[in-house]
Structure formats: structure tokens, C-alpha cells
Amino acid sequence: MISQSMQDALNLQIQHEIYSAHLYLAMSSHCESEGLKGFAHWFKLQYDEEMMHAMKFYDYIQDQGAKAIVPAIEAPPAEFDSPLLMFEEVLKHEQFVTARINDLVDLSLSEKDHATHIFLQWFVTEQVEEEATANDIIDQLKMVGSEKTGLFMINREMASRAAVPAQ
Image (cartoon, rainbow, N blue to C red; front, side, top):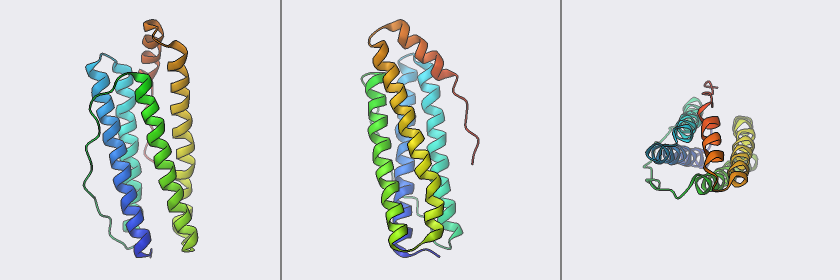
């Protein structure tokens, strides 16, 4: 059983994860409309991954005998200036999510909620990967600058991203 404060905090994290998914779907739509189908594909898979994260929180809350609440989700932006600026926004957003996960870990430690602490370790590791991926893509986009051939090549690489099986 988890405390009410932990239940509330985990439910808030569901909101953050679903917002992340919506942000990535909006980015996918924007890329699709700009002819960047590889980037669109990458963002669609990121949408799926974020929804999987939301469901992990949902299932954990329910498994702990608490009630998962699906909150209202704010609409993300629909227009973006460039792939580089999109991925800089991705990094900023993932850093926000990392901070929220860290807050949850801190709460689990302060409440001596060992089960939740163990559950959250997967997300701690996941956030390291999310930020590293965003940084790698930012570095590539900065490297090619406004060179259309370079953007074309990165777009092709993004199209080869494989779906991650549910964990």
C-alpha cells in the first residue's frame, strides 16, 4: 500500500508522461507536414514509448491498491521552427521529466517506501538514456547545420528506429 501523498505524486507523473506522449505526437505531425518522414517516424515511436511509461505508472498504482487517476492534459505546441530547435525542446522536456522522477525517488526515500523506490529505478535509468539520445541527435543536427544533404541523411537514419518492445 502506498501513502496518499505517493499516490498523488505518481498520478501527477501519469499526467507528465501523457503530456510527453502528446508533445512527441505533435512533433511527429509537424515533421510529417514538413516532409521529414524519418523524424515523424522517430517521434511516433517516442509517443508509443511515453504512453508505455504512463501505463507503467498506472499499473503500479493499481497494483498497490491505490487508484490511478487520468488527469486532463494540456495541449502541446503544434508548430516548431526546425529539427534542431525541436530536439533542444525534447532535451529540455526530458530534463524536466528527469527532475520529476528524481522528486518521486526522494519522496519514496523520505517515506521509506521501498517498493516504490525499486519501481522508480527503471525510470531513473530510462531518463539517462532519454537525455543522452536527445543530446546525440542535437550534436548531429548542429554538425550538419543548414546543410540539406546532412538533414536528409539524419532523416533517413531516424526512419530506421525500431519500436521498443513493451517492458
